[in-house]
Amino acid sequence: MKKASVMVSLILLCLCVACGNSSNQIVEETKEVEESLTEVDTPQEEPIELVVCSQLSSYDGVQGGWFAQVMQEKFNVKLIISPYLDVEKGLEQGFLGDIIVFGNTGDSYKTAVEEGVLLDWEANDLLAEHGSYILENMPKALEHNRSLVPQKDKIFGFGNNVASSNDTFEEVIYTWDIRWDLYKELGYPTVKDLDELTTLFEDMKKICPTDDSGEETYAMSIWPDWDTNMVMCVKAMASAYYGYDEFHFGLYDSDTGAFYGALDENGPYLEMLKYFNTLYRKGLLDPNSKTQTYEDMLKKLQSSGLFFSVMGYCGSLAYNTEGHIAENKYMASLLPEDATPATYGMSVTGGNRVWTIGADTQNPELCMQIINWLCTPEGRLTYEYGPQGVMWDYDEEGNTYFTELGKTCYEDRVTLLTGDYEGYFSDGCPQINNITWSYNAENPESNGETYNAHNWKSNAPSASCEMEQDWRDYTGTLTTLAYMKTKNCVVVPAINYEAPEKREALQKVWDQVANCIVTESWNAIYAESDEEYEKIVSKMVAGARACGYEQCMTWCKQEAERRRALEEDVR
Image 1 (cartoon, one colour):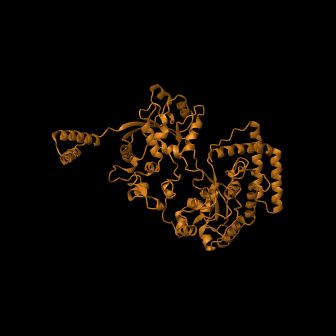
Image 2: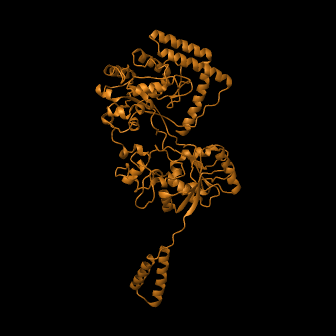
Image 3: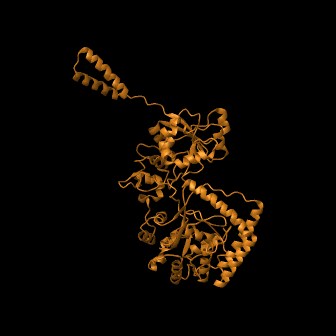
């Protein structure tokens, strides 16, 4: 439109000068012509069709709905989604797709790289010029992609679910859930360490000695179903208190790289084994723990027979039912002051669902621009929740919020859209079925929030009962994740570690050692005195060593060193 107007102006100027017209006449006549041109519709360019071949999609056809409108408005493209990705067929036809999404980094992806059907993102400065946001904000993910086929030494894309930092973590496993209604009744006593936690349990039992069925209550109930190299619930307590991660026959400290064998004197596993024995002897550990199943334990929890769980899935997530909430009975997190629980970091290198571009695309710059936009905060949130300003936006403090329409669509995707966008929200959801940033990655344009609407300040649901509101008031937070972020958690880096297969002879030794440690650990938990406990532990140590424990330790320590190197690479 502007080019046409300028050309007309120049023509008029030449004519007017030739005829001796005044400058005022030139301006007026030019304006009249420009105004007449605005009434003429300029033909809109036809959208460019891009084939998005995604192994993760089950949709076959044109992307429709609101996302199609966004793509046309921003890039003037029409996306054709194809779930069929056959590398061999693509080689025969000479075209695999414009944007290609692999479901993993296995044979199909590596064959595509080796056969040259994927675009080198660094060639002709494609990434630097058209993917600058990716280049600046996802360097580890890009370099990880380069390492997948090292002999090529090229970047062909990046994986899904990228974290913004090694210091960010997913939902918490070790939530330290207690019966908050009982805690409030006791006057919110200070809990500094395990000794004070035990005292709290004793006081809770005094005011709540029986459950809903009249059976005796306990602080904890554990189970043997998931035991492998050690007793699972014992090692979990060490992870929850010290932040050490279970690692083969011991526990590993990601902060220092130290490895603690299960039988180390004064080590974390034996310390927590002693703690469970203490609880048993004080009548605070369910005596049926050794012979029951996980389902048996859950029934006791749901009958209000337990006060505590170190893990959320067998604590608050199972206990806070509609029935208990109606009775104002509630479990919530209370972290001892000295505890530094292990939390599991998100990966700055991304997952194995790879975004790539086909080498034979006629529109490499456009493909890169689209993927780059999907990595921006606007693109990531739009892909998930709909267009900015229509479905979501930021308030004056930078907090993310839903519009009224956006909130309705978030709660019910089969919602009919209004305004400039047509159809049901669900009809327009992106069919590529892959993401860029993790849901829990930090959004740098917000006030410290993430892309996960569940954790937005504006989206927090009302407290379900008086006790939940009391917990919120006491902690100053709205969710367990927010509460844990205020504490000294240990973030275990996300790495691509896989244990090598053990030699047959070592595996035989390993199984014998594991059987000895698990069997004698349970016996130690049920010891009736300190003397009996020490006798059982000594028997366990001697028996494990006789089975080849030191041989297993040599292997474990070598693997700990390898893990440390992998962690350093992503820090």
